[in-house]
Amino acid sequence: MIAIVDYGVGNLFSLRSSLETLGLDVVVTADPDKLCAADRIILPGVGAFGDAIQKLQATGLVPVLQTEAETKPLLGICLGMQLLFQTSYEFGQWQGLGFVPGAVCPLQPDLEAAGRAELKVPQIGWNALQILQNDPIFKYVKNGEYVYYVHSFYGKHCAANTLAVSEYAVPVPGVVKAGRVYGMQFHPEKSGDTGLRLLKAFAEL
Image (cartoon, rainbow, N blue to C red):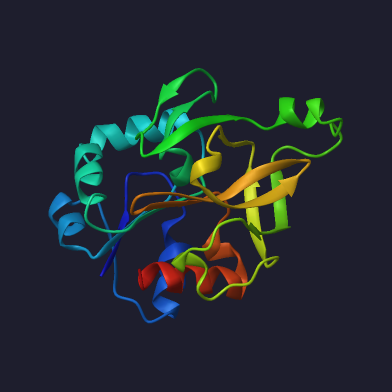
């Protein structure tokens, strides 16, 4: 069973539908017992980091996630991936869950520094995934397949934990990993067949 963490942030319906399309047993829950009983956990998220981490902390689930991630795969998606990092600089400075070394930083200043200030922020749309490290999460996808992004902030100082990037004037970490914890900056549930195949691989970890 895959448990999707329900903490008031995230498009849970499309994610659940994608997993059910794959024939997987899914529960959307904020119940610690159900998270502990699950084989795998997915942490979704849309919106701002500060609001999301505060809502997650308010559920009391942070220590549960930190404990469960020691023994089972956990996947953070979009903002859920960013919550996995140590720190975020989105409208202030916030402490994340600390699974992935590094920081979540604004995209716009780095686009300007790269001489590409004309690129739109947020990055919205399809971008090719460049696989940097072999990993079972890529079991069913090939290098260069396209995935769907919606984000204004991105992970930095995390090269050792970055499995794949997408170029947007700067290399945006698309997939990160630390132990059994994975993060996807893009939305696999909105990335068509490629996204379904990534979710299928996660379900088989």
